[in-house]
Figure 1: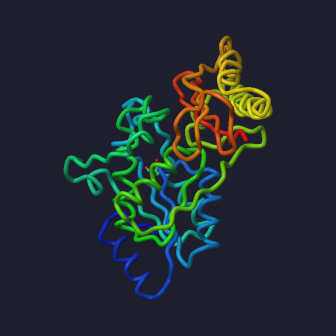
Figure 2: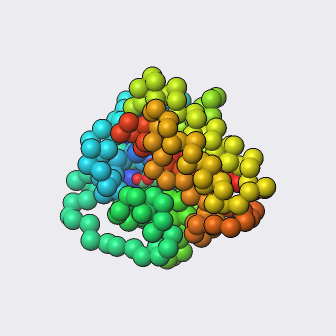
Length: 279
Ligand code: PAF
């Protein structure tokens, strides 16, 4: 496995790979890798000749400076994990390498970016889109892999590909969960033992919401979920939304096939998100 830290070397590796007729699968990450990331790499390995993974904690997608400062950084461990799943190349640039100048680019994702994560984390999706477009230009992937835990991000990336006429095929990968149901996330590492023990409650409530959704309307389900968190000692609900899986716009009446429940919860200062297809 080769590790590059410059754009020039990575791009020339990608160009050589393409010139030799091989396909490239790309998995963008912010490091602090876990089994969820590895499942994306394994899928990328199955579907492509060569897999490139980027490890870059992208400062411009953090709306909260403290979250950026405390984001886990575990490079040595990440590289060992990637070598073990036969990743071919890693791109691990510095902030200066990626952003030698102030980033001015802004995208218009319309209503897709104004709800849920977009509403609670201003500027987040613009920062994600800037880095993903740049990473695509460096790694030249045929296919790029994104997890459905960040479901809204996935829809934004699909919109980015359309708006900017980018070539990679976007491959959506199912949420990877711990045995107790907690969605895998790099931020889970920051949970205290008590919070970690409490956190599977999020997925449990989502499952309950799903089991109620054929017989109840969206407002009833939302009230149910809000009540489930109202006096929880460790978990504080930020939002629960029932939304269409394509447009991400909120649903208030009958729940239809393709509607999802989207949730954001604070465990202390650690923000966890999850989602479930309701019908
Ligand atoms: O999902 C993530 O880890 C990040 O948002 C991504 C796609 C690597 C962009 O920084």
